[in-house]
Image 1 (cartoon, rainbow, N blue to C red):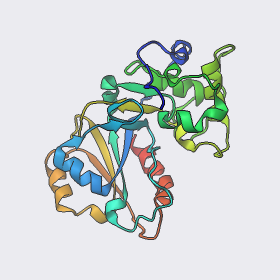
Image 2: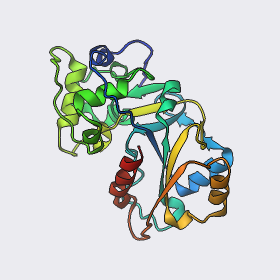
Image 3: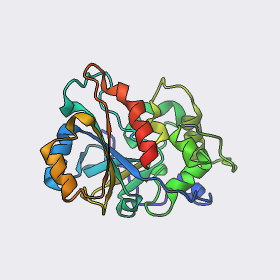
Image 4: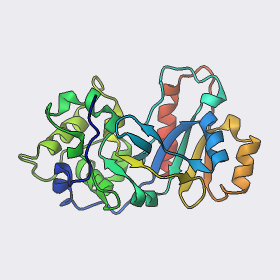
Length: 257
């Protein structure tokens, strides 16, 4: 069993990255769930952290600017209850974040071995919350928010000689093959251990299937706590799998973040 990563000390990656000038543009944070879970989230007043097997504590996972987390892509949606839902949270939530990583941390042990030294630890890559780390990472490896959202990485502008964690990230991002891991490796991950409200204080927008747009519980939320939260819809195709919707969700979220 993998030991719980110790992410309290300053990481090797952050020591190098903090000398990068951050982008001025800040993106919002995306959390993916499904319509069935959304009903409970609205009923409970927000997103409640769930136990994480890696960090051994309740956490909620979000990705910077993109709905990068994916359900079982080959599963037919069919039921509207299974339809993907994206909750877009204001970037201010990062200040209360627990951890920040430049990639999907859940795949570090299982899928990133071809891009890292076997003795590297996840703790060597964590970034501090609330210090423009996400904007620095995007600036260094993508150059612009549009390139980040389009998943078009570039080479770092500064030397990283002897900075082995930087070398690993560069290899990971600029390897165009999906043989070892999908594009979640190009998405910045935020972990939170507090509840997130579905009100304007935390939430900016909601992306839902049109088939639930007239649900009473959703309309009541929009007239009450959700007033002011932008709601966008997409068409649900019963025979499509969850993977079919990824491109459309990325497109909608790019307009909202």
